[in-house]
Amino acid sequence: MQLNEVRWHPLLKQWIIIAGHRGKRPWRPGERGERFCPFCPGAPETKDLGEWDVIVLPNKYPALSPTPPKPMEPGSPLFRVIDAKGVCEVLVETPKHEGDLCDLSLEHMSKVINMFKREYERLSSLPFIEYVAEFRNKGKEIGVSLTHPHSQIYALPFIPPRVAAEIESFKEYYEKTGNCLLCDILSEERRIGKRIIYENKLFTILLPYYAMWPYEVHVYPKKHLGSLADFSDEDSLYLGDALRVVTATYNMLFERDMPYIMVFHQNPSKKKLDYYHMHVEFYQPYRDKDKLKYAAGIEWGFGVFTYDGVPEVKAKELRDACKKAVDKRLDKVLGECIG
Ligand code: ZN
Ligand code: ZN
Ligand code: FE
Image (tube, rainbow, N blue to C red; front, side, top):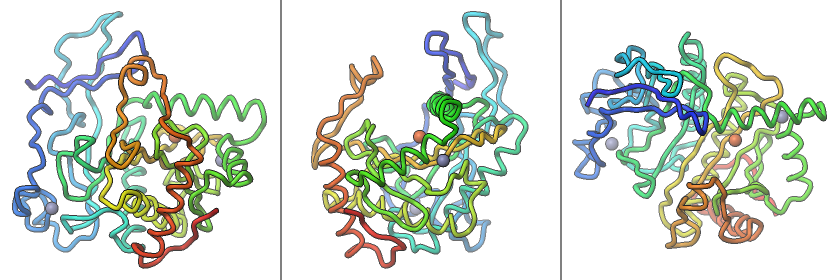
């Protein structure tokens, strides 16, 4: 069914994207051989693009589009609805069908970051966009339907609730103290040191005090940067280094390829909030070598997370894996494991 609209959840005060056509998405076509993969060189989707390292393609099953159909019903005070107006893209990081971010060279990775930056700026300038959500899902455990390395970009007509909640906290903290919440958290984490995993000149990788997922990892810029639009080429290079280190660390942790979710939290498109500090978050669904952590009753039904384990112990496991990854897996790094 072609129904495509954005409905308001009046109890939780958040928008839900209804995308009737996405039910028909194919499941992991690349697994049957490279010639079925839409992102490999030579596929109809990419063959007119010539040589490429990193490309952005339209999402073939977009949840939002610049020219959406009209909502099924006009909406009412209780059942509000808006057009599913937005842009959904796929950012293909490499022409190679296999691998992870850590398998790209440092130079290649900084091109990837620059592409995220370019799309953040370009999509943010569209009049109907309020927020550019950039993220990467990896692994069948979290439902990734294509195996070829890729990230996604959803340019949304609203600010997502998780970012809105962060903005509220940054604002409140700034009004109370005159400081940036994340700058203060980062200097406190660096002082304590227990949860820091790796640092380069410009970024810190840590398992935050308030981790919700067992091996959750955050990447915080040491400089107060609001979004990728504030990045210099040097910032992109050092963020690229940090993202390679996180993914190599995950893949080293249980000595196999690990699934994860990576998200960029940045300023909204139309508001440059001086008190907001961009960052990258990684969530990983395993709580142990072969045990998955599920968001079930207490987490999903109530929004209360239980952390299975001790964050400081998990941080140490990650730091040990990071050391191994830096020694064995990565050809070049710009920083060092801490602790
Ligand atoms: Zn492929
Ligand atoms: Zn800051
Ligand atoms: Fe965040």
